[in-house]
Length: 434
Image 1 (tube, rainbow, N blue to C red):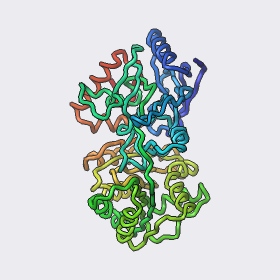
Image 2 (cartoon, helix red, strand yellow; image 1 turned 90 degrees about the vertical axis):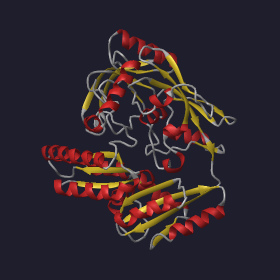
Image 3 (cartoon, rainbow, N blue to C red; image 1 turned 45 degrees about the vertical axis):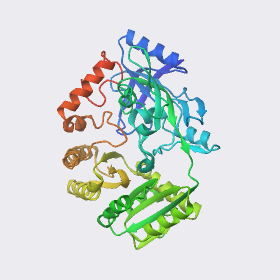
Image 4 (cartoon, rainbow, N blue to C red; image 1 turned 180 degrees about the vertical axis):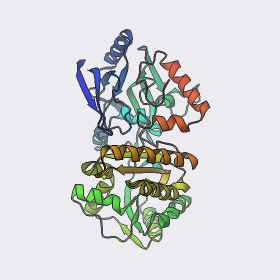
């Protein structure tokens, strides 16, 4: 176990936070000892992973103690009979992919940052580009080991495929952002790699033209592994940052899809159907072009960060509200004198928005952004949406989460927090206030 002094910068706001100390446990026993020591000293504890979060969920805003699980990065066991991969919480998505590369299996969730830890993914219920077909992190975890606020060890879930044995404690901890317990070890669901995969890019003149095609695709019975949307202005940031060119295809709004399966003839039939949905279509058979397009799509947020301070958002709305929501949010940004780009996961209603400061003064930026976010989250709630699809609530969305969640739901969540952590030791002040 290691300990050091630590300062941490909120990568979203740029605010500097200071922790009392940071611990680096190497085992579950170390985690238990740290939790018990923190409790005995009446301190507060924040568990951190890969530090790729976008909601301020691990930011030390009141001299809390930090505990980094980065040294708990062992891949423990691959059980092909139960299709389960057991890993420690500090293992990254990149390390999981690398380990499984030489096997016939893969771990399906594909969040934007491959350096994120699997424990952090579980804590926020991360989604990613393959969620349409394969589900989010929650759908791909069979069981977990969790350390409670009093140091007790708890195993939640199981490697059984079916389970109707009491409360589903596993799903309570997934998405809880470290406020209920410390996830130390996970049994992940793996599955056979599909034999064939194809990618297609469709171009449209506007999001208004693109939107009904999403419903048509989903209603047709096709289940794309990925179904992404973005506009040309979003791609411009990535093109500048990566020095890669977007393919020569007409349109201002685009759908990027991956189809996969074990029957190549079926994939070709599906591609033919998809190509008929747009006047501008490009089947990405060239590996270099395909890789470039996916790199450009994946680099939008980081590319904007290279040019300006931004506020990254990840709201979710019903799938039939994607286009009208983006149109409304764009107009709100224009009315407020703000620059904004929109993209996201078309198949599940997850809209990513980057609100960009550009050359605004700090004072003007703060005032305009606050007014804009008030309007944005009110609109999202009005159409039946939620403030976060995959980044979590943390500190940055806490006000809006508490404002628009139902009173009974918030009371129930607070009761859970008090039941698992009665002394409010673990990540206090995140998601909601007690």
